[in-house]
Image (cartoon, rainbow, N blue to C red):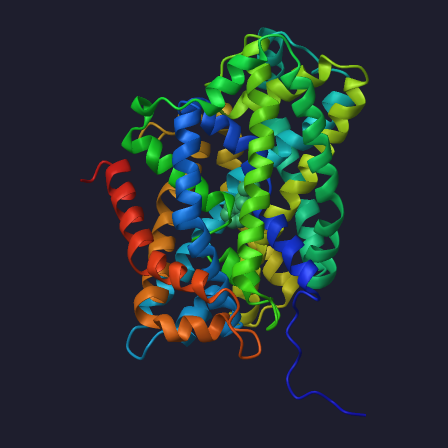
Length: 455
Ligand code: PHE
């Protein structure tokens, strides 16, 4: 019998599997919870426009560059920068460590929001939340998030579920789970859209979502949109890099990234169309923030026959979508700890989960016990969100751009994006290079410095 000399590295098994897992990382609470809530608090259509621009000019090129780096080095984020950086420039690996911190920070609050979703599955089954009355909806959500026991309980359930899947490994765990349920979620969002659009006064919601008022674009709004673009496509923190390290050599990276970006945008837009018409129709407040989706989705379902069943299915699918994103968030530190420090996968996962639960507790308790623990006026939940999306991810994004644009260069980029010696989409790759070398880092720097008020 032939024996292999090196252990075969785990990885995705087919082009379709790659697409689904990558999409599974991108699509998540970002589309269904964060996108509507940020669009609502930041002025609607004008925010959407800035977000679209950020996704095309910064998001897509960074996604291509980041996955390419992972596939080139076939290693975790820190080791990748270490391997690919020129001699004497070991400091590039800071980008990998920032991603490590970022993924844990995001998980700390993301797991809490996922916990709300899990809780809403049971609440909709019990018929507790089916109401179109803003006051009742607000009270139901408020009651849940301000209970320390409920908040912590659901967060732990979420991490237990995610942890068990991650221990199964890349191909069996991540790929198998994410490939099945995405199409269902899409279908149910469509149903929601139709119901929302046929409510009386739906037009006002569409105007809010699609007619821009440019006076509403402030530096903070621009930074929020850029942060969302990174968050949405799981960029700037080594998550896509780690997934790229599992891509096969034959995978066409630019095509995969473009598809993921478009599908992801489609899901966000559907969520927006499902939510805003109903917001205005029922007299909710578009700027309600993180609670928005948890009030509007039940309201729309409550206004249709069989709503309770659909509502339950909807929250189940949202929970599934959140799993795909969390698996990728957890895979980043797990890959790093297990490959760099030789920890077994399960041990690495256990450490990462312990860290998440430790950091997650203050985030989960932000509406109760830790509400007064503010920094820059933000409670732990909002602080983790702000620090990761609006600081760490853009910074990581700049480093990836500069690394690929200036250290790597065009010939190397073309070589690494080629499959079996052939470069498909050569024109697109050249545009990506220009974006990564000049446009994206400049845009990120300007938006970041302005948004943080450092100019
Ligand atoms: N993209 C995921 C979402 O929208 C969240 C995420 C952010 C996942 C960063 C990985 C890394 O829900």
